Amino acid sequence: MQSTNYAYVRGQVLPLEQATLHISDLSIQRGYGVFDYFRVFDGRPVFLDEYLARFRASAQALHLPVLLSDEELKAVIQELIHKNAMPASGMKMILTGGYSANGFDLAEPSLLILQQPLNLPGPDMLEQGIKIITHDYVREVPRAKTINYTIGIRLIEEIRRRGASDVLYQRGGVVSEFPRCNLFIVTHDNTVLTPSENVLLGVTRKHVLALAGKKYKAAEDTVTLEEVYNAKEVFLTSTTKRILPVVQVDERVIGTGKPGEVTLALLQDLVRLEEEAGAREKV
Ligand SMILES: Cc1ncc(COP(=O)(O)O)c(C=O)c1O
Image (cartoon, rainbow, N blue to C red; front, top):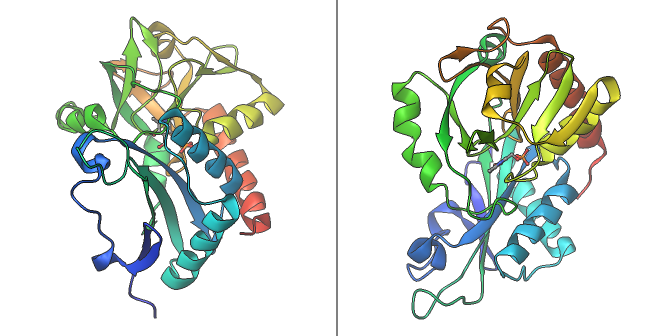
């Protein structure tokens, strides 16, 4: 049984204990960097090309060159999958500003790739749904998956204190996203809506929008906090959560207070899509 976990750091595949960065790295000095995260299912990355494309778009938004081609990245990913032999996992690719001489100017970027075990939400969470709170915030570069989660992490204490599981960002009564997930609402005429502005273009969001469009009216649009409070169903999407029902927002109960049928139907459709894609995808 394989017990050592390996990671890729600046050109080398190393055991995790040796997988370190120098303190001059701009991620440490200034929180400067981007990342992406995809799931590995039965030893195969799921929707890898979509995550690689977003990783490159995030890197470009922060003026960070990705020094490896997609083929080279896939070869490293394959090597880690083989060496780590983890059954259910996610893989994180991180690209930082590099070892900066003066702690501010960009240097040659540091590329890191690591694999971590991953547990998807259990049946309890799916049956009960979660409570969320809201907070006035918009991410600085919303289209980029930046490594800076200061506000999200600072809010963990308040989320727990208020008996919630996550926080939805809003500004001026218009909602955007969660620290690590996208938002969807289902209106009383079964229209599926997700915010169009100030959001990360989630891979799960894209798939859920397409799946929803096959059965219901579905669109990206401005979504207000008032519309969230009055929605028939609310749910969040992400790679690590798939679809998670939201049954309370601040002190307002959503719909019947139980996960809705559109939410649960879309979750089944998503699981099926992932299985089909996972079975096909080759690195
Ligand atoms: C800010 C933000 N929004 C949305 C998402 C969900 O995106 P995906 O479905 O691609 O995981 C993430 C993922 O971490 C995120 O960081």
